Length: 265
Image (tube, rainbow, N blue to C red):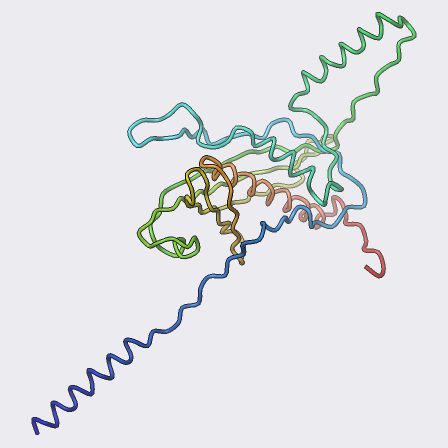
């Protein structure tokens, strides 16, 4: 009897050991190491370009960098979001979507035009050739960075995606963009969109980070950015996503339309 009980006990231990050693394989996260998919460039072209103006697109969060014990004077997010917005508009549909007119540096532009008029008048008098009129915009884009959150995270699924140890820290930046499209003639808000981007980053060198865009089903990586660019990167991707939304929602509301595809293509 004792021998039988001992035999069953040993068999149970052996079976438990076999089951414990046979781990269920965990599927590794699929991460694309190719350059990030540029949704702006893949937008279908419009029937005609939209003339658009950007006056100001800035930081509406008012957040400052912190160092644990004191607040620094420098801002937490980039103050050049309007530059990224103009670049995104110029890139949309490989440059076929928007005709962007200068408004951020409008004072400088007007001063330079006045200098040209004065110079021509001095040399040519009444016969001085007139400057062409400035192009006016049909719509304006307003808005800015309305939310920003960052923290250091240890372990979890982000560590697996980034390919680091479960005890290593990585940074998570989350940026929210608000954007409105306004009719110049009526002042009506034609479209209003909000986008959010979450970027994970980890240091892979002295001043180089690896980035993960958490906003896509197939996570995408991009390396080669300096230490302070993870926030700027998140802002840029959120702005690009907002421009894509503006284009698609505008087409849905029949503010504009996509160019019909040519037969055979």
